[in-house]
Structures are given as structure tokens and as C-alpha cells.
Length: 420
Image 1 (cartoon, rainbow, N blue to C red):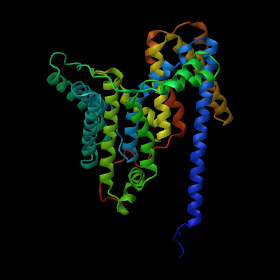
Image 2: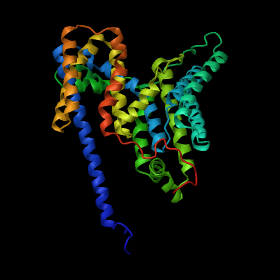
Image 3: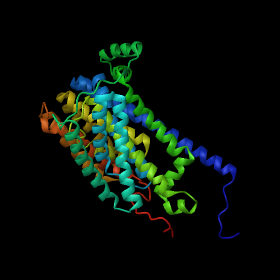
Image 4: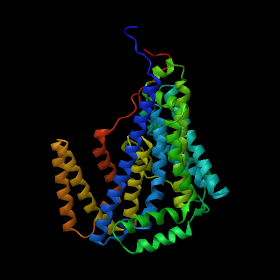
């Protein structure tokens, strides 16, 4: 009939799937290439400046440890926003997770602490879902309220549970770690040689094979598991349809409210797990104000990753690395100025090649300023070093903003039965 759209043939479907798989493979190769180029730049800067801590095994291990809470918060944001609900309450859910892990972990051990922290974060997510999905509260307002609620609730619970020291919990026993003796020892030997690129790869191998907390392994497994659930199952297709076209999904029989509730609750649980790792594993104790805005950085990592798991993982690692390097060595932070120069020049050349002359010229100007700063100083002020993670967050988001594509219905109010 004229005016109607014919269904695709089986051959067209097979071709479409093949094209999608080729795109995924190409994206994977691009990611590998980007990692190799970044590592080569770090290796070159290490040799030129002598800043060995810039990509040592200890720095990389610390970066991974610091990236886990950020990544789990970002992963939680991905679940929520893929279903169409903005969740800026991740920070409050992380706060609930840190308290739950610190309290329960000090009594029953770190694994119970992580479980309780996850459940408390999920409770915060459920409150956010009730407010936004059922009662239609503005999602930004609800997220801010969750952040304030998380802080207030944990302060009250601390006064009840820790009367002697209301700002911190008792010590949490250490969690178990995994070491691969033969591989980690060989990697350490090669890393100590200081060879270009090869020693840097060995540092990464050492970091991921020596005393890796089991909680880190769990967190890493959650990344491909999320990708599989959201992009390879019917459940994930329905959930993502709620964030792209909720009225169309409802007209096809999808229970939009149910999937939004599941997504936002899981979002809170993941943020709570990230907070639990921060308290029970990284610090071994709960302290008030422990998250220090990492929930917001996790949200930034999700945006940097374009609402996808792979990009989120890369962004979390980048932000974790900047935190780790400023904690371990001021010289390494100073050497990072050269890395910034290299990448700004590369971005400027790419922008000019794409005829984006304004961004290219601006990048060249900032590259020149960074180079002058490096040549005229020996050590960066402490204030600059402490602010490095947040500056990198703003810089990365500003550079990545040109290619972002959020879910079409993300943040939009949705009332059942209002399909047009």
C-alpha cells in the first residue's frame, strides 16, 4: 500500500547487524590505538623529564583504585539516564554507601559493608524514583534534595552509631587481594629497566596483577555486564526505549514506570557500591565528607563517555589517574604540563584539519601558555596540584562536548497515558 513502510527483509536485518558489529569493532580498535598513543606520550615525557612516577606501577594501581568509585557512580548515572531520568543525586547516594560500608564493615567485615552500602545507595535511588517517576518532581530538584538528604541522614546516623567519634567509624578489616606471582614479578623487573613504552606496559601489567582487591575485580566485571544487559538483551532494549521514546514504548506495551524504577534503583545501588569501596576498601574507615564530590565527577565521566560503558570506563580512569598523580608526586604533576602541551597541539591540528579554526587557534594558545608555564617553573604550587582532577574534568568535558548525544527523552517529564 502507498504511504506505508514495508518491513525489512531478513537480508537487510543481517546486513544491519553486520554493520553494527563492524562499527563496534572499529570503535574498539580506535580505543586501543588511543590508549597506545597516550601511553607512548607518557613514556616519552617520563624519559625527557625523569619523572618516573608519572606512570609507575604504584601510580597506575592508585589510579585504578581511585577510578573505581568514580566509575561506579558514573555507571549508576548511565543506568538512570538511559531510562530517561537525570540523576544528579549520585553524590548523596555515594555518601549513604560510604556510611553503610563503614558501619557494617566495622562490625561484620568488608563484604557485608559493601552489601549494606549498596543497599543504602539503592534506597536513595528508590526515593529519587518515587519522587520523579511517580510524583513528577523535577529531576534536578529531586537530585539536589537526595544529596542534602544523604548528608543529613549520615550525620544523624553517625551521632547514633558512633557517639564517641561522630565523624568517623571504627576501622574496617582489609579486604582480600589477588596476586599473580610469576607475571607480576616479571613485570616489575621489566618496569625497572626504564625502557621506552615496554617498561610502561610492564608497569600496567604489574598494577593489574599485584595485590588487586577483589572488590576491584567485581567493579570491573560490572562494566561488561552492564553493556550486555543494556545493549544485548530485550530487557535492555526496553529500558533504553524509555529514555529515547517513552510514549512510543508505552504504546507497544512496555511498562515505562517499571523500567524507570528498576534503572534508578540500580543506579543508586551502583553509586552506593562505589561509596562503599571508597570507605571499606580504599580508606578502611568511614569519614564524614569522604566522597569529596566524586559522585559529580562520576556524572562527568558518564557524560564524557557519551552515555556508553566504554567511554565511561576511559573517563573514570582518566579522572582517577589525575587524582592519583597529584597524591603521589608533585614532580609528576609538573611533567603532566608537557603531556597537556602535546595533546592540545594534536587537538589543534585536528581542529584545523576539520576547518574548526577557532577551537584550533584557542588550543594552540593554551598549548603555548602551558609550555611557557612548564619551562619557567620547577614545581607547581600545591593548590594547582590539588585542583588538577577538577581542572581536567572541566577541560575534558569542554573538549568532548562537540560529539555528545544524550538519550532523546533524558530529563523530560513523563506522565502515563499522555502519548501523542
